[in-house]
Image (cartoon, rainbow, N blue to C red; front, side, top):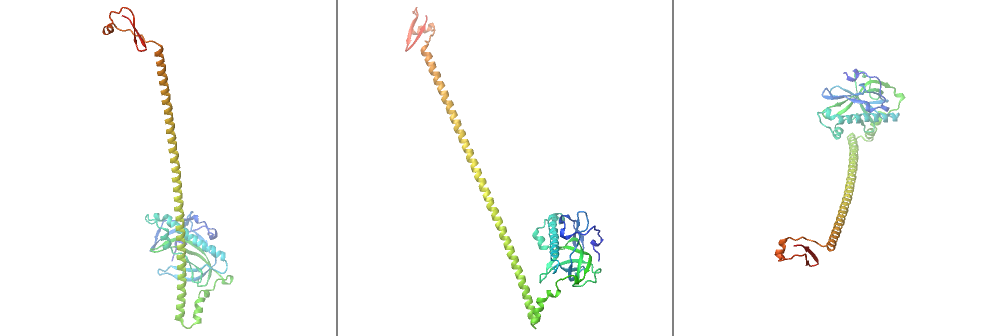
Length: 348
């Protein structure tokens, strides 16, 4: 069995304790077997290789098409800090993979945007937790090269983060062993495998009724599952309540903002109305003053005209036919006719 990772060249081994996740580059999906793979490289097109801390083999597996997998116990009684850092590294790689699938889904999957909920539902994590709380990490290996391995061996590895593997109902990160070094057990203090089954063995030792003990074990498993489901529901409910609270806060804030805008708009409207009313009053006052000025000037003009007419007599030269009408044709001298307070003078 051959792997693409074994044929690829790489320059150096990355340190998982100080790994630069922004240096991960994702290639376009390629068809591989009954699925598709998204190869993972560095920005300089190198393979990403990491060296693991010391891990213990707890299971060796082969699937139905012949691929071999190794389950490794990350939880040890020593190097607790290293175990936590390595687990954090694995989780961060998977989160970064999921983020890039989301960001590139329209490009990779026929313009279809895949939601985070769907990605979470279909993601198969590279690590899991055993019934006794151990963290189990699954990697791929070539059985022909490591036939000497057995459960309980302690090893450290050079792992290639090869690709994201897509199947019909799931996707997962493929971690492939490039190099394996076996460590002597005398140098380390890992959890004994017998501890994993200690709880079950005690049940069998206390009773000869195996069937009853199996029922108790199954009951305990069911209780754990129920507790886990209950905890998950509580967390989901808490998240839902927090989300509702955030939405309510945003709604209240939006109403407050709209109310403030309405208040400011009303103030602007009132100010504009007052300005217009003031302008109208000013114009009316100006018109009144101008009208009053015109009236006074007209009155003064009339008074002056009246005074001028009173002080200056009006002299009119009458035509001769006027005397015919008045029967004054025989008048030889100037006469004065008085009409009210005005004196008119004429000639024959």
